[in-house]
Length: 136
Figure 1 (tube, rainbow, N blue to C red):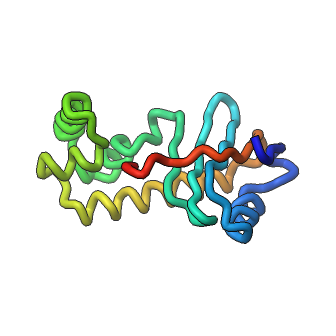
Figure 2 (cartoon, rainbow, N blue to C red; figure 1 turned 60 degrees about the vertical axis):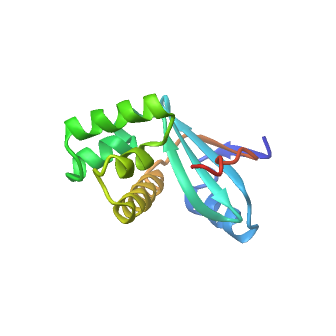
């Protein structure tokens, strides 16, 4: 753990600015009330955000936005389990979403998750050297 503290002392905007200015790579882990988000950075740029809250999973985002229906999501998730692929790849392979739409929805989903962190006024954070696997 390289850097840690409380959000009351270090707001998310300051943490992301620090990571960007120092061109940090790794993950910023933020926890509050049993929820956790991991913001993955590569040379100071946000490349992914993962949440422990099932309501914030990518598949739920796609359902809520109307990009796929529940049957399509179940089919894609079963494909992921059988083939060991990521959801975005499964959606593309099954013809449920074109690659361009997968990339766009992933970008917007990550942006939404990171923006939601700006509403967190309390909680703890730490920065770690954990990196997102290249496949993701």
